[in-house]
Length: 256
Image 1 (cartoon, rainbow, N blue to C red):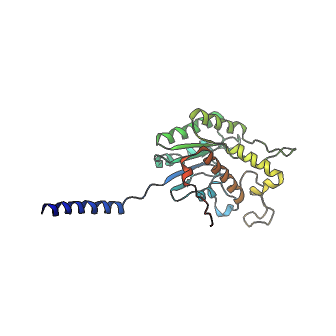
Image 2 (cartoon, helix red, strand yellow; image 1 turned 120 degrees about the vertical axis):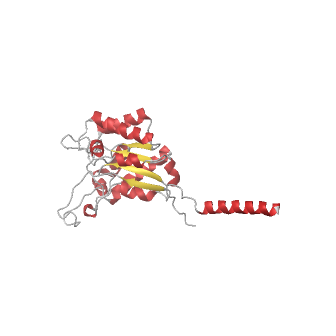
Image 3 (spheres, rainbow, N blue to C red; image 1 turned 180 degrees about the vertical axis):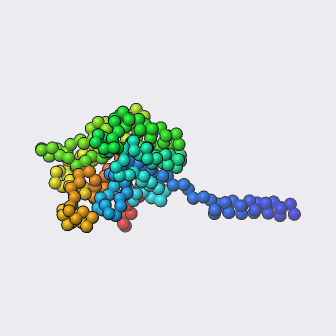
């Protein structure tokens, strides 16, 4: 009788464990929040073929990663906070999540309402970093991706000198991973040259696309190809930095 009771207890315990195992909660995905401006953001179909690099970036990761693209057209560090776009990110952050931070295009233009003096720019970036860390998250600073601009000799110019330098300085001071997309994109533009680099940007002849019947000459915003090229530059630096996200990058299927 005692043996039967023991067997019953063991059987019940095994059944409970089996049920718990069968109904265990799925492993939580790592969330990667992208905050920044129009060079990253998701576009409306009416803007196509303009594409933010955050759009193809989604496709580089397996099911264990969820990309949250919170970037918005025309935003600076100042307006991203003022419009209450940052606080919802902070509120959602959990330990192990990432925040990729790329601002500068709209911060640096004095004639825009989004203008953020360099000292304030620094303070906002530090705010993003400290509040991300306070939630157990991982901030990653990204220098603003380069605009397409060449001098008369065909040399690709650094279009974000002061603001990109500030990002680099803060990354060193705060011991935060840095993706120097400014320099990486300048190198890519230089490699392609004055004419071929146009292929990466939203440049269209009149009548070429119904969204831009009069054509478009845009040396800031990317088309699909350009967005993917920039996203791949970011991906390469994730490998270089050896972030935990490396383990979730989709691996190519090798045909036998």
